[in-house]
Length: 136
Image (tube, rainbow, N blue to C red):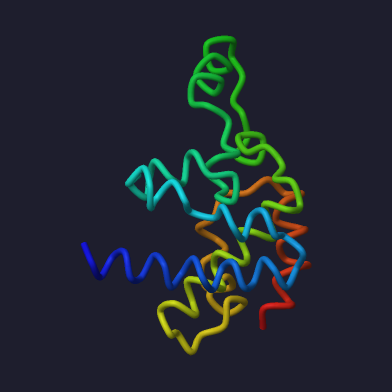
């Protein structure tokens, strides 16, 4: 438990530092507080935190209702566009994880390796790919 809290605080420090560089002061302060104070699981945190793409997923209920009426929702419709400030916080989160883990791989390189596995709205991906270049 101590190691998890130590990592979480180190990660939170780096995310705050990255957010502050970009003028995202509130996100830097409040980032991942639910993990610390509510002890949420990663999956629950990803569904409830606006800086995670999973938060912007259309509810499975909506997808199921569409199927009842004969519609198949394409993958890109199953995710709402993320506001710019949350895309930036997501990038700061990834950079904070990289720094907290003391990884030599850049956030940009990590994204390029994993982008095909990520579900995002096309508008969100376009913004993310424009902004992530700054994390090379």
